[in-house]
Length: 152
Image (cartoon, rainbow, N blue to C red):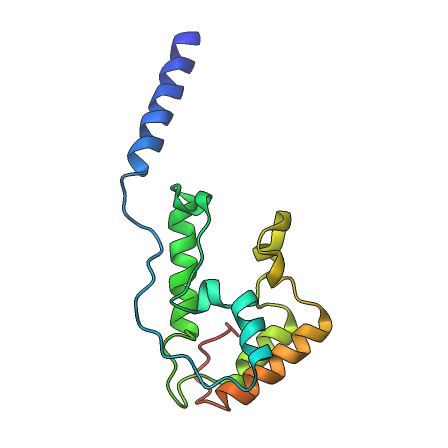
């Protein structure tokens, strides 16, 4: 029985080691065309609460480079950038009203993003949510309502 446990542990260690060789990590493209922010405060709140998933300026931590966490983070960031990317802004491309609703509802940033004290600067107060929502509406405008921010 002990022999099987040792083999299983060794197999798991080898599989974990091989998983580290899969180059599926978050990369930050050089494209940076930010919107004309309605105020410096709006940009500051967006950087704190949104940029890690919704820009080409993602800040990574050490554990985000370890598979399989790295794979999940990469997928999450790719989805976030597809819905809204502050680094690839173009007039009318994004809907500020939908982004504001996601912030006010509390679905953005997602609650798990600040679990265990991680990303503490993204834990917004009710007042900060109101300010960010108003700023996103003013910055992004009404957009084209394509449903890119939230699933209905």
